[in-house]
Image (cartoon, rainbow, N blue to C red; front, side, top):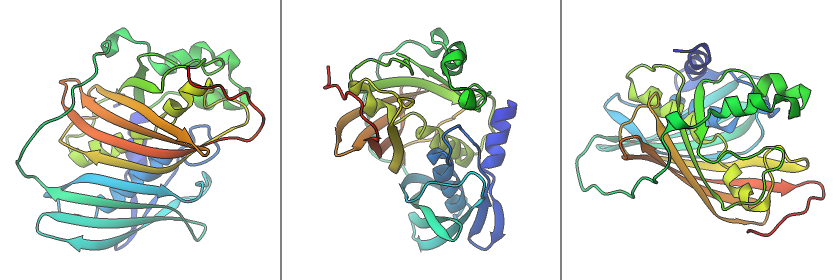
Length: 294
């Protein structure tokens, strides 16, 4: 396990404070606030800590209420809403400075057999033929503001490899579709809950970029305000996050300063293992020539 991945696993290993109450630390990704995938994943871990071992998460839905303060720990309060014969339901509230910054509803299910079908995995190049995103960013380090350069070029716990990389300086207009291979940078324990938490962490990374693509702007465009508003994750079958997964996303609509993105995550074998949906704030705070879709 690489040092950054070990740090991520430690970040997701919450400190128990009392029954149903946990505390988590933060990691700076250069945005000036807590990364949404971190608080989502930590809330999922908090919920899982209160659930019988025979049940795995199958869906989690979160709302981002306030920006997280990187300098303060986050305290997670878990409500045990229901323990049924097949399903367990939990609600988690994340607190900083006495205020709720995020809440999560999560459902856990016993393993069952049943009908099975899925959509077909997109035909894209193998990850070994693609350049890691971190390498692409380091190659253009001289174009990154000095205040962000160290953070954005630091080693990562996840290896992301975009099929069609977006230029952060001059992105150009393109269809709102993205394909990215990703995996943990090292071997993870066999515990499925750890793989689910790491995937939850990664599932928010770069998701809203898909909604920007028709408008020729990037997440680093001056005057752009970009923030996750809500995030939903469905986990369909067991998987390993330390093996290659394909994240295929598309944005069917952006309107009213909000962008909507949906995603499907496939194992390399072609199995559809997870689905994602998110709405985010996409707001220009200073004049910028918004271009119509190509």
